[in-house]
Amino acid sequence: MDSSVLQNLKDWRQLVADAEGCSAVGIISDIVLEEITVSKPKDIGSLFKIKGISNEQCFLFGDAILLIINSVSDKSDYKVPNDADSKENDAPLSVSRYLDYLNNQLDGPPVRVQGEISSFNQSGKGIFFSLKDARDDSVLNCIIWKNVYELSGIEFKIGMEIIASGSSEIYKTRGNLSFVTRSVEMVGEGALKIAYDKLKAKLQKEGIFDEAKKRPLPLYPVKIGLITSKGGAVISDFMANIGRFGYRISFIDSRVEGQLATEELLNSIRTFRKKDIDVLVIIRGGCSMESFLPFNNEMLVREIANFPVPVVAGIGHEKDVSLLAMASDLMVSTPTAVANALNESWEQAESKVKISEQKLFGIFNETLHNQTANIRDSLDTIKNAFQKIFSDFSKAEESLKIGFKSIKDQMVDIKRRLVGVFGPVFRKFDHSIMRTRTDLTNTLQKKIFVAFNTVKNGNDSLLVSYEKTLTMNDPKRQLKLGYSIARVNGSILKSTGQIKKGNTVTVGLHQGIFESEVTIIKEDNQ
Amino acid sequence: MADKKVNLKESLTKLNTIVEWFEEQEEVDVEAGLVKVKEGAELIKVCRKRLSEVENEFKEIQREMDKE
Image (cartoon, rainbow over all chains, first blue to last red; front, top):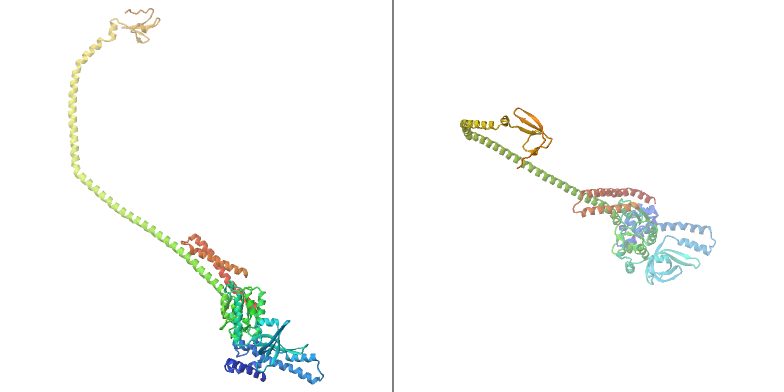
């Protein structure tokens, strides 16, 4: 175990504890520090694996711990060539070689230096400024490249206290020692707050935070761009809560804390700008105001505000919401909430289907039920109607039967009575008729006989006279007496008009006939 | 994937239209209702299938991400 490393860690821990106002072991325990010293983690990932270290400790102190371990080990590395050089070779070094040597010695992990800006001036691509120590007027000459300066979002002013991160380097053509600043941060809650408020007001005025600018999350998002730190517990929270809806998650590992986070975040966002994604997600665990610094960077905020697809920020907040979150389309406080927001439309789709199914079959079943009930009612009505008809019929039949029976009885009764009453009458009547007939017959026969006899007797004398008359008038008697009957063509001649000259006339006499021819016709003169 | 997304959205819209039709009817005609119910049931099936299908695709995506 490197005791100097352990001591450095303990010294650092004491500083943090003093700042936080708590005990040293409250920050990180001795056992964990010893473990770190032994295993010498090179990155956050290895630091995480150390037994006893919490996620929060990694988030908060990871960078610092790694810096201490690695800066100590680096120094021990480049001491060796120095010793070797001095022992083997007494020959003078060239200026350039010496400056190279010095630069080599000066090169190392970034150091954070705090001071007050005492001067600054821009020249070409760099801004030259000096940091002054307020206690003893010590001065450090610094340079910051313009792109880094712009990224920092801090506007330098004389008298402003800042922390510059970087390392010193001797500019060989001038021999000046310059502290090359890789990132800048403001010092003190007050200053941070002022800067935050100022930037917030400025962006607000531009309408970057306007509600109207917020885009809704796409329905059923699939392609998700995810930016967070790989080592954090945040990503596992997110993955645990994101539903199984066929998401395609593209992930970019980025620091989310410290001054270097700004640049990494910016690059990550710019990378996703070129990718085909439905939604961009930026998540991190909740921490102190100071750790929000990267998310309050103006360039980062603008990048988010102009991002082509909706952005969801789940970066937590305490008193003040980070400006990045405010510029995003949806801000929630935890990775779980981000996952829920992404799941929402999918889950709604599931419940939409379910509700639709219930409604659809519910209404239709009700319809069928109603129809069935209608049919049943109709059947009942018909059945009742028929039953009534049948029962009425039965009643009618019954009464008819009774009626018939009574008619029959009455008829029998009438018959009986008729026989009883009219029997003797008829018999009497019969006898009367018989007697009357006999009487009539007798009377009539007698009367007719008498009458006939009377008539017969009276007529006998009349007949004799009639016979006489008839005999007297018999034409044949006349013929005997000498009369004859002339006929022509069978007809008795009564006048000359009946004959013509030459006609043959047949003359009947008492005992024969003869024929004569008409030769002369003479008519009586009257 | 994009097609499925559109289909899910479309299917849900169609399904919703059918449900609204039923809700609007004062007295549902059984014949017409049966046709709609059949159509709705088919859409429900399609949606359910979509939702379960994408669930299966999730694992593959996770593996792809792990490889990166």
